[in-house]
Length: 125
Ligand SMILES: [Zn+2]
Picture 1: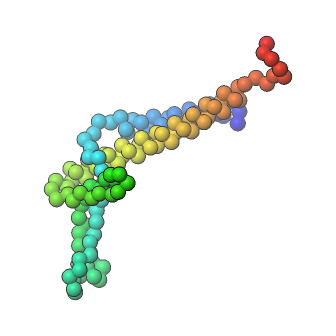
Picture 2 (picture 1 turned 120 degrees about the vertical axis):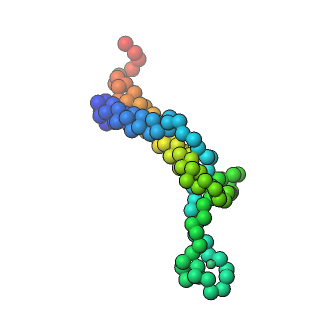
Picture 3 (picture 1 turned 180 degrees about the vertical axis):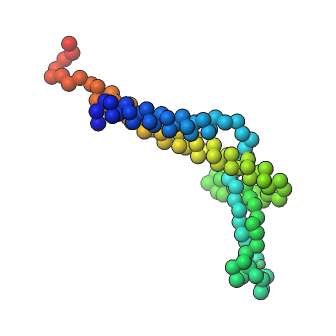
C-alpha cells in the first residue's frame, strides 16, 4: 500500500472511531449488567406452556462474575432498569468497537512508517 492510501485509511478509521467514542462519552445512568427477557415452561401437567405458549416474559439483569452468569430478577420499574442496562450494553459495545479501530489504526501507522523508510545500500548520509 502506498503512503497516501494508508493515510486515507487511517483518516477514515479515525472518523469511525470518533463516532463510537462520542457514544461512549455520553453521560448516561447505567446498571452494570445485560438486559435479559425469558419465557419459561413450568412443570404443571396440562399447562398451556407445554404446547409452546410459555410464561413470561420475565426480566433479569445478567452479569458474569468469575466466569459464571448470574441472573438477578427484576420485578419493579422495568422500563427504567431496561434502559439503564441498555446504556451499559451500548457503552460496552462502543468501547469494544473503539479498541478494534485503535488496533487497526496502530497497524496502519506501522505500515505508514515502513512505507516512508528510505531505501539505502549501507550506512546513513
Ligand atoms: Zn406452564
